[in-house]
Length: 143
Image 1 (cartoon, rainbow, N blue to C red):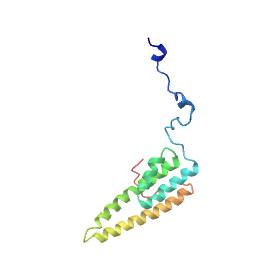
Image 2: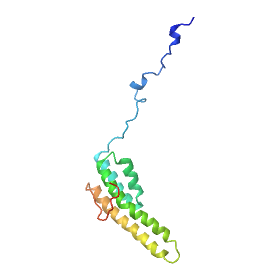
Image 3: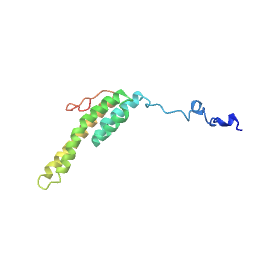
Image 4: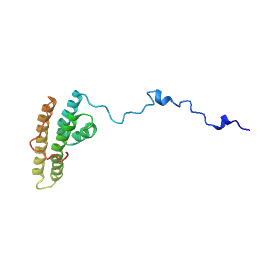
């Protein structure tokens, strides 16, 4: 004969701990919003990142777009500004390897990077002061 108490499964010793122990509680589905200073800081970094091309602003946009409105706006602006010139600069870099006209494309490549650097620094300074910045020449591909 078997005992009916043995037929029922006993709860695990840790059952119920999930609800009371913070270790077991799940992380929130979305990250915490940025503070005002963090929002301005990441927006500034998105513009200064233009010195390196479009990747810094893309990373900042993808990570922080839902956490801070100023960062979302400014990283999108920086991404829209830096994406086309970076692609053109990389094409000019490849074309600079050509024997006859390579020197011309090397100069074009250098001018593009100088322009990106100058405009990125100007924008970064303005955004660091808390002012939104709009580039004069921007395709605004990402809306």
